[in-house]
Image (cartoon, rainbow, N blue to C red):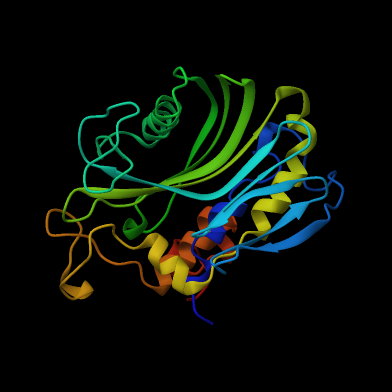
Length: 268
């Protein structure tokens, strides 16, 4: 079994029901029925709850909205240039934005929310983190974490929960940032915890698309084995790294069930 195919699926399950909006637990939550959905380009699939509508499905990204103002976005990626942050401004050479790579993960996430709002002509959102938990991943996958936050934006107050990874910077100073995000009004957030977890857990990305998703933005022209993290470029994600991304970030697998390559105690 190829380990690469697990890579982004891990982010999807990174949120347990307790993390998701900070309420329901897996044991008390009722089963959630989902309708299978696959993007037209076959790049990703996920389950869609009854009454929800898919508004975007392409390039490993699936976005869906619920009947009570909820939304779930799976696999959104933002390419950043390692430079001073500029809210709403496009980055160079096709990058979405500019922001310092050395910025802590939580601040990077805040910058992306601020940049997105400014790019849409909206005021800067008021973001308050309720929790931010680092996730230990192999160095080739950069930094990852889970978060729960409250945000006040143009549409009003929302509760947000998700997982966020900032991948290593490449030889040209670009780096990818990948997110899974659930949003809901405070009045319905708690009751949607199990539903969000079920949707996140259903998210799947084929191996070939996963490799594109995790690979460096700047094309590598020398053998991956000769590339080291730091000025000369970054190592390409291999099968093991991708499996760790899936198991640790998305599936929140207990350490006792993780292979040693992913920091666990189970034989590889």
